[in-house]
Length: 261
Image (cartoon, rainbow, N blue to C red; front, side):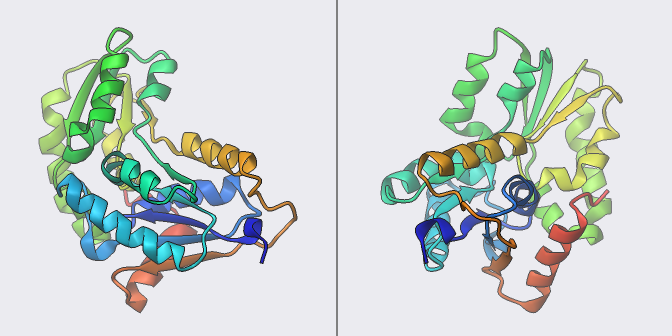
């Protein structure tokens, strides 16, 4: 098999990365993908950076066993905590990571931006540097959302608890003139409809999917790794919680969309 025929690996701490996967497969319809959800250890957002790096390394090893030609970290927390170490450890493998779409919101001219993300993502130097870089162009407020990704992993059964937690998290900012919301965790688009209920209808939401899709395509082109032929795409699902029910959940969310609301 030629190197460009190899699949692209995508991973997340759980089901959240399937939202990213859907964007990537549409942007690169000739490419094969392998998605790995580390649901056994989800969520990553409230673990230490060292733990996230260790878990992410284990997942990368799983994907390398399938001879992937590139890896996309479809997890904001793992990108911020583990990507630098992974890039050093695997110099021969293109490794990209999704990041909070703060730049996209600022470039769109938003002036009062709320960034919702896990505590670990919001505490990492890369996010803090980005926030500081744009502080003269917009009022940027960071909102840690402990527990939210974990509830979303539970699916529809957790919707009452999700609604309650969102009320607790968002009530303190309900009187602020927020015109842009950055969903800084790939789990959060599952409940974008619920989050939108808390803001004015004109509020714009940003998730970072278009940026990572464009970055992946450009990276593969530069490395001469894009498939040159028309090809019937395949998408394979793997999980650290290796049960038929978990794989079926991944397949269902991939096929039918991501809005639990």
